[in-house]
Image (cartoon, one colour):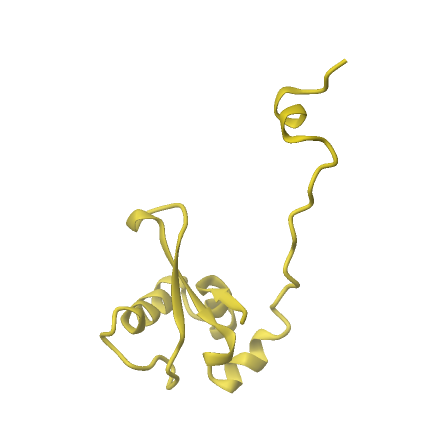
Length: 97
């Protein structure tokens, strides 16, 4: 299942990140059952920043179908981290001659 950060959802809705965050946080904390008329599946992850780094992500298939259609052009293929052919110790300390 694919999860999206709130910034992507806010962009598709044309709302501010904070407005979307408030609505999604209410669902995550159990204060509301729905947001935008849908029962969202929300997960919290540890990140960087305020509120001890708590960030929300919403599962795509739990969003209303109209919003899912608007999100399709905005979604990027997941980018995998490229691994360096050098061992980690050589990357960290430079090349060994």
